[in-house]
Amino acid sequence: MAAQFAMVAAVLSCLLALASCNTEGDILYKQRLAWKDPDNVLESWDPTLVNPCTWFHVTCNNDNTIIRVDLGNAGISGPLIPDLGGLQNLQYLELYDNSLNGTIPATLGNLSKLISLDLYENQLTGEIPATLGAIGTLRYLRLYENNLTGVIPTSLGNLTSLQELKLQKNALSGSIPSSLGNLKTLFFLKLNENMLSGTVPLEVLSLVISGNLTELNIAKNDLAGTVRSSGFRVILTRIVTAIITVSAIIQDKLKTT
Image (cartoon, rainbow, N blue to C red; front, top):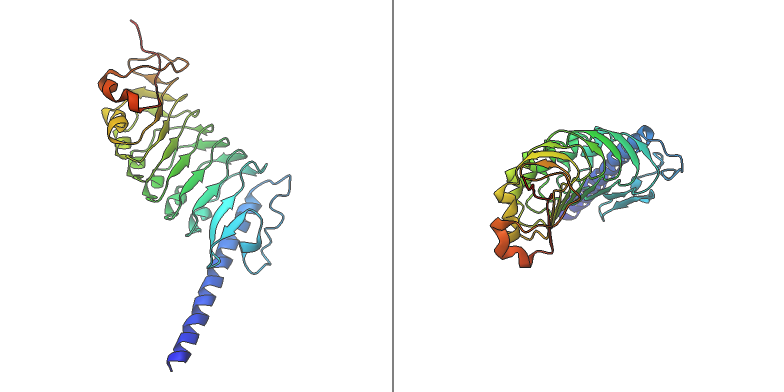
């Protein structure tokens, strides 16, 4: 009896895994149809195959569920579909240096195992979804060199495993959220070449002392007490005792009048 139960359980497990693969394959095939692919890099994304684990640019785990999509510098263009939020085990979404347009789907916040979200050097527009702040596993969030607008979501301060936050060269406005001071694991914070205003929160500056921050770049913004400049290095008086532990603190050139 026990052996029969074990066999039934094994069969059910296989069927569930197969169903999951088929669902994930449907999602990626739908994404393929939404993109233009002049170099045919997605030619292997064939929905008639048993699962997508044999497709190029797709990596699966031992359970045949997708954990990586690697399409950096692939020559693709078009939007990101909301269905991507259904890739429940995805850890790496690498879509940098393409011609992707449209907005970043809020559903990407459902990717609860995501480690790296690389959408930089595209043509994405709209706001950064606040839902991304729900991805507690995220270590790398790189959205730079797009056309993103709106404010930096305060929810990004919930990403307490984050090591790199790179949002430079967009059109972001508003103030720098003080909640970013919660990111004690952060090494790089690059916000330069936006339209940010207000002041740099002390909570963020404190990451030099209480966190791991090695580079803070806020050059070419509209922050109070600075002018839009090429990013001269300055000593921040509030943290002068900690400056020797920092490789680079980069701020706009201080106003002289």
